[in-house]
Length: 128
Image 1: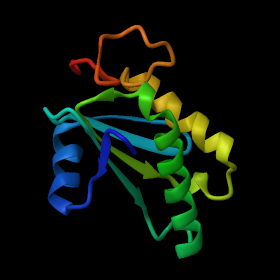
Image 2 (image 1 turned 180 degrees about the vertical axis):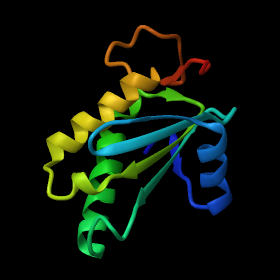
Image 3 (image 1 turned 90 degrees about the vertical axis):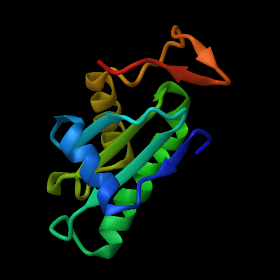
């Protein structure tokens, strides 16, 4: 991930949950918060209710890879927390990809058309 880091601390997740805006669909919930930096931070949460460790890690890897491949199309300067719902278990890569990009569009943090101002290959836009 060129412009991103991982959210790791419990307190960082808590800030995004408490101060961020959320949207959800059938498979995922996404919280987004402006972080004031020139890079994004991505956190992924998969509960034990979703499945055993193999299932949870598979979903985590899929979401991280989907984000990595689409990273150029996300705006910079945000914290993102993706929560995987139980219904995502057993879904294929393309269904998870569609769900993640759908949430990105709802939050207005994802665009396929590079029509925003770019600085060092990073899309900037202030979240409202």
